[in-house]
Length: 104
Image (cartoon, rainbow, N blue to C red; front, side):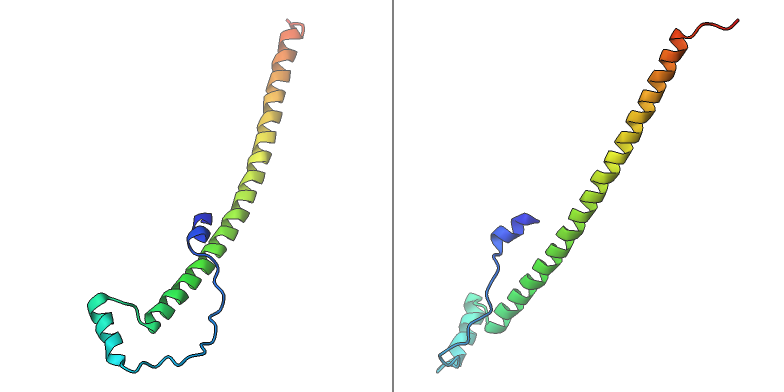
């Protein structure tokens, strides 16, 4: 998930434009869009919104994974401590059986 941040850097809000966005020959833009596949402003805005939504989803997923990873590590430590205690108990009982006098 951290790899995504390398490819999609955080972006600043768009600056207000100082020039007019209207073209003198608007049909040229439509022709280029149709022939060459150039993106329109609406398509670029859609892509940016989708990227922002994906980034938010990835951040949420990463935070949830981090929490779950911590919980799993804690649970693993508890289970490991209990297994060690059980192993010591078995070892102590075996030692007691070896060194205790037989009762016949």
